[in-house]
Image 1 (cartoon, rainbow, N blue to C red):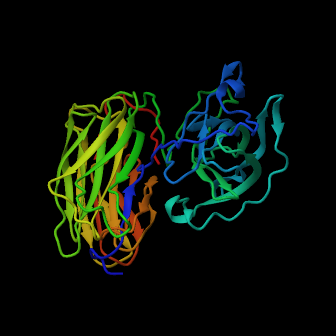
Image 2 (tube, rainbow, N blue to C red):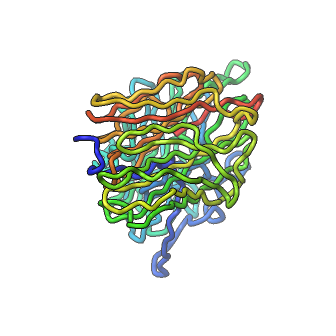
Image 3 (cartoon, rainbow, N blue to C red):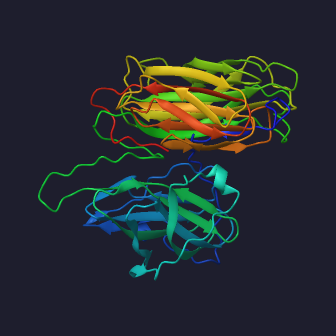
Length: 451
């Protein structure tokens, strides 16, 4: 496929991960159980357990939440998680777990919360094949495999709560996925992490866990921490943005952590034979203005913007508004943007590295961030005329193909501190990349977490 403006685009960086909760309708004739925490009444060691961690919900009708993002334990953990069917259709779900290959880890038992307490879900079964349409948009790296599965029926609008006993070998650690596949098209995916902590010998507990996909966290280890992500794109008919489009508005929720930072990445493509209009302004919460940090041109333009050093994004749900200097013109035009917020970022100088690059035909897109320190966090945006596949990054943020523009696939990722070389497997076509590394504030952040 040639990399030109007549081709289709993946529209948006999703979170860079997005937490969009869909509305749903309750039907009075259907019995609902465990629809809220009061009904669930989950407790552990006398304390209420609240599943609150979730991540990229773009394109998902099933919202999965866990009580922790990073689990630690001595040869095992208990994970409490909820599964909410936000669609208007009752479904039977296969719920399965993915773990790193060649690592001694698996699910020993799963229970569901009922009015009478915890009920064993029975023997776990072999995994089922993932739906084809989610293999690229909801990427699970090939070094992970589905090992354990159980079945659950969940009504429209219903939330069910589960408890999984996960056991692992000493020194085992890594990411794991919980995936829900419905018999009527419902889908959800979540990925916390686990790590071994030796507490049997009376020694101090240590946690060297590095997360791969993200959610918010706090702490005090001096590392940059992923907070949240969201995305948006111009409206169109599949062949381009609507004529007259000059603005995209994205709702983004910023967490309350300290030393916050916001990054907005955008791909802009003009109609065939015409230059793409430049981005004029990007604002957040009605008055906080971002400025361009890096831009890479080609048959379209890829760039990222940030708030000034020392300006922290306003806490809570607010709009990010991206405005172009001129209207997009319909056919083959596109404007796709993603927003990410972080905590634990140095407020006097946010960036240690910033770079951009491009390449011709080939199957690897790469970028170097030479000063990405051990507690920092790198991020990058990539666009390719054919496809974006696997990444060396610790968190991949998938895009959504909207059939517009010159960039067929737009992807975003973040990387662990100390990772200076960033690459993606892409289709044999031209590619663009922009990225940077956020500097850790002294004593800020928590465990490094990504998606």
